[in-house]
Image 1 (tube, one colour):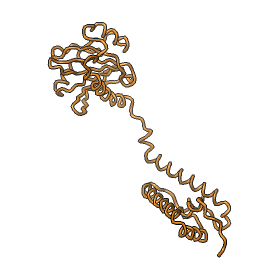
Image 2 (cartoon, helix red, strand yellow):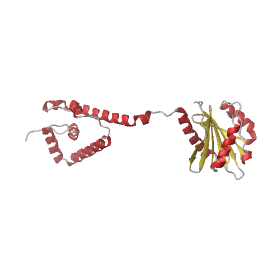
Image 3 (cartoon, one colour):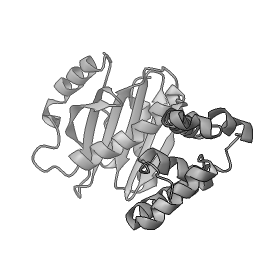
Length: 261
């Protein structure tokens, strides 16, 4: 029997990638027949390769000439096979990255329109603020209703709204509990809280819209929590509560009439 060098991991990878000539392939297959653990490992590699090929079959643009550019040619190339194998591995990685980038790149790197991004974030933040603060018993707000003038002046200064007024919703059955400063889409915002005679609460959020554009009334729902929101120039508003949509809309319309535009 001809004396052969031990089979290396590089040769096993080359076997899986069909890059060996007939003599080396037979040598590896003999080795695998005598080493069941190595044979199982190679079978796993082959299964992984089959899975990758199936996943990217619809996007592959390569031709047989591409493989000839990186595959070793004949027995004379045996001494430099390790270098070729490194190139093969790099080529496979580049191909996979190219496929993923071409297929998913636009979705990953395409930025939404600024106004759309703000409008999408506003109701979610209003929803979260309602869940956090409306259930608070002792500390739902920072400044209570008995200091309404101070509340309006403080929040108006922080939001750069000199004429900010706290909406009066008593005609709709809601009295002011108070308010607080909180972040709204990455900037300082204001929250006013109200409750009716039964203790049912709702919140009104005011934020700064850096895009200085406007939207009509919009509605968002998450579970039992409803939100009406709109953007008016450089200000954004959201009214949130676990009340009927019809009542919440009336509250939103009343706030719209009272807030500065």
